[in-house]
Amino acid sequence: MPERTSADAAESGAGPTAVVLCFVLRAGVGGPEVLLGVKKTGFGRGKTVGVGGKVEPGESAAQAAVRELAEETGLVTVPEDLERAGTVAFRFPASPESDMDCTVFLARTAKGEAAESAEIAPVWCPVADLPFARMWEDSVLWLPRLLAGERFSATVLLAPDNESVAAFGTEPLA
Ligand SMILES: Nc1[nH]c(=O)nc2c1ncn2[C@H]1C[C@H](O)[C@@H](COP(=O)(O)OP(=O)(O)OP(=O)(O)O)O1
Image 1 (cartoon, rainbow, N blue to C red):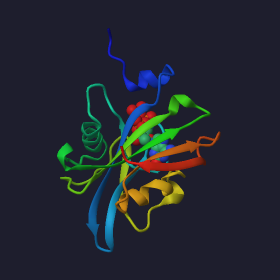
Image 2 (image 1 turned 135 degrees about the vertical axis):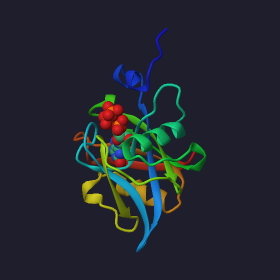
Image 3 (image 1 turned 45 degrees about the vertical axis):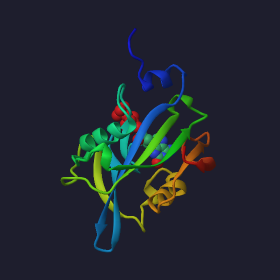
């Protein structure tokens, strides 16, 4: 039997797509910085987003985070260096095929220089001054808290415009 991917599952209505986000941290001159990127293609195009994407069949979430970070920015890390900071369930009632279950990782060590790829133009941002006006509207609700050390499983319920937040909640990280 052919292997079903998470994308297949979402498209057939079988459930959310498994995705990851990987936030690399570094010490900047004025304080800690986090690597974000301007998304050039696909879902969320034009927004400033975290680095990440879909978990492929046979991969762990941490392996997907390592792979996406390398593919999108050229930075190299290993699963052992990633901290699983939380999960975010993105729910799009107006387009359920877009539902995603996202595992969020933090990386405090990564080798190389972040470089632009076909998908992302990387940008180091001060953790204390993130560009929320250019990000997904929900990110202000969960990203600063995860970067500050809170650990939780969040659920974001998007409004019918697939952009604004209809509801947000957290529970202890499973
Ligand atoms: N409401 C939301 N807020 C947020 O901050 N990030 C979100 C979000 N909804 C989705 N994401 C992130 C999670 C995931 O890393 C990314 C979408 O996954 P992908 O990069 O795999 O999408 P693409 O359509 O570009 O995929 P490909 O077809 O593989 O290129 O968007």
